[in-house]
Image 1 (spheres, rainbow, N blue to C red):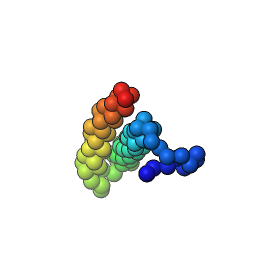
Image 2: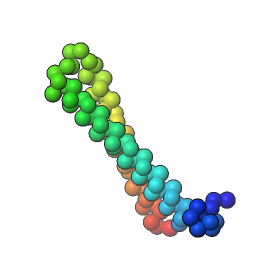
Image 3: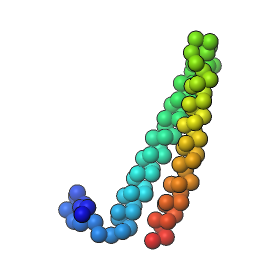
Length: 90
């Protein structure tokens, strides 16, 4: 049985459990994925454009990893929106 930590009450409400699951889990995962993709894009731009060190480093691998991070974030966004919509319809 799940309990609310602050009020020490059981969480019997489906709305409360769904809100914790949907909003907290998907918001945190989506935000962290977008932050990681943005950080890797910044490092790729730094190495490629600003430092001109692409001949020494593996820039195509960095660019591919950055593209995959953004693709995973775009793939995660509809899932979050559909879960949030189904939570709102309860």
